[in-house]
Image (cartoon, rainbow, N blue to C red; front, side, top):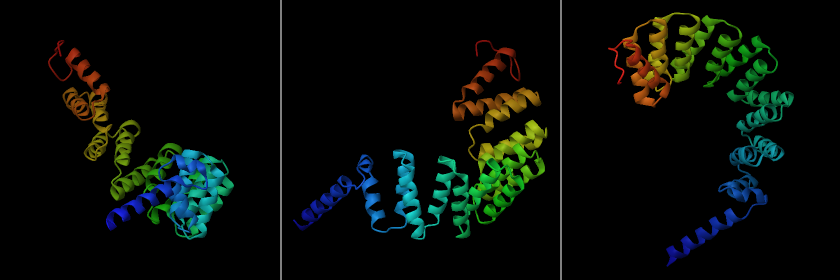
Length: 266
């Protein structure tokens, strides 16, 4: 009997939490009222989630900023980064974005340095400053900084040795399959070093990249004219990912007798 009463009371409490919300818009979301209640009671973590709900679902950026600033006052440095991201990425206010990213960085949050790097790169076009901030963010342990920096060197500065260096850091330190694939692509298309392209595509494939096997098939077919190997990799690509582009090339190679005896039925 006592257990039934306890369960009834618990269910009533859950119902009351889900039914009540000072902001009625939150009732449309399962966690909305509970997040609001915890945030109103002074929790320093739930306002970050509540702000995200206001951004992603309700599109009320003023309310999101209110909660980001409130939880930053409570000591959550992720909320300073959140405010910076909201100002910069959603409101186009890069000046205030920098202010809040700097707050996060000064409080030891590596996302703040990453945000400053991205503004320096994409908005200010100050690439030396962007490099400086990416390197700071990387030293602070940010998982995205090395990959972002490699892209800056490759796409914008055309500094391929440094691009290789930072893609390798991203792959080796963070097991980033996208960095391995990017290295394969860079060695194939730009540096024309096909053995290294094969090496990095194979690493990317081993790490689970869905595009690497198809890319290997194209490399063997177009650049190396090794049609037998090309057919092997197109088959692997189709078997593992059901990629119809790979299936098309398998059909074409059987049609033309490339790497295999011509078989029009196949």
